[in-house]
Image 1 (cartoon, one colour):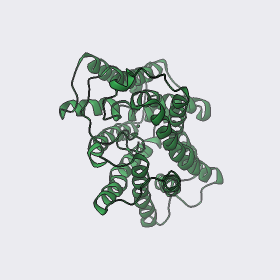
Image 2: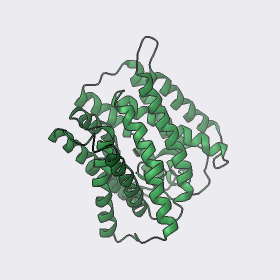
Image 3: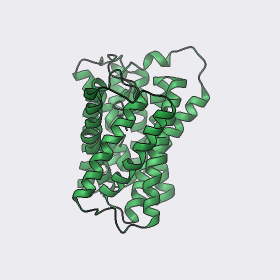
Image 4: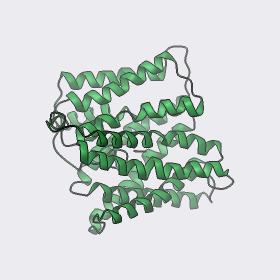
Length: 330
């Protein structure tokens, strides 16, 4: 399902050097996608404030997004009838792999600011690159080291200078989300080989919907009942703007500008989250967190732009909805 940067398994540097004129409309579509994914944490905070719990938020999000993506795939005439082995592995990828990542991230949101949670998650491009190097899929060169160093230094600043306080459990959940997402991407690159991105997104989202609806039944509907209309509206907005529209815009932009530029533009997702957190939620940012956020985004941009070539495995899916930022990001 998803997210960009090293989420492009096909070696982004080749597209960056392409001579064809850059499609500005495609860049705008990728920005729309980044803004959509960046809004997820904000809508999540609003849903929590209105009385929805974590399970309720995620059950609502995926239960609405899954049929929307299935319908979009049908309208686009994508092949949804897959063999049982492929269909089951995609459902499992969403119902287990992506569901756990989303649970970690949205639990972190209950304890730390939206911008901080998003920046912690965006450690994953550096972790994916490091994992690709360890697995022999990518070459370690000076540009890659620089991108990794920038990302790691940025996370240190985001976590705060001496005297600043963040909820330790929330930070641990945010970092765990990034680590789990890294494994999800590295595994998903192989599991999604040869599968259409939009069809994969529909299956992965459906798998996640099944898991969270089952969880909601197990807990007796707690986290879904008694919420305000504004909370339900935020949940629907997550499903529509933050998932279905974001995925569709990314895939449309990817087709027009290529994987390299799509990955680079998508790296601005946490920028949208931080900006919306300040404007909508009234979050406060210290100079250290601003500098850390800039470093994290710069590292995420440098890794696909200047890093060593990667082994061409998997499909070119977006990390938020495909395993290359995943098959649905969070």
